[in-house]
Image (spheres, rainbow, N blue to C red):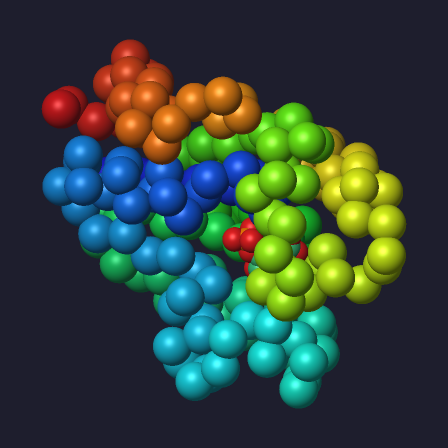
Length: 175
Ligand code: S3P
């Protein structure tokens, strides 16, 4: 079975918008893990964090990874923290090609400035420091992707075209 295309990377690196474009380009389905969890729980991610806590969200995220991997060829846009869990990382890597989207801190801050959408960033006053620390703690795991692309000054269209090139050259797709 063809490997899924799994987008990983920090909040605000464009996983959802590039995922949408990439799935259209590849003519396959897209699952955005956060949206998948929200639909199952009947609550938004910030509501889940507020009502049930991060551990509950992470448990639902682990379930979602396992369920989504059962599908046929799909673009999977993960949440920024999904691959922090070693078992999630292992499963996604085994069944998918891991593409990491990156962006510089200023771009991440600009793209995530709206409050109330990302509970991991709303915890402390100093948002830049929060982003820098979280990025540092995840740097090593993100670096284990099969391919990385900086989205800071690129449109979702440009990013998805570059991903398609990578997939073609690597023999992951024939398109
Ligand atoms: C998180 C990222 C979010 C979402 C949740 C936790 C994280 O997804 O899963 O708020 O820990 O980095 P996005 O990366 O799509 O914002």
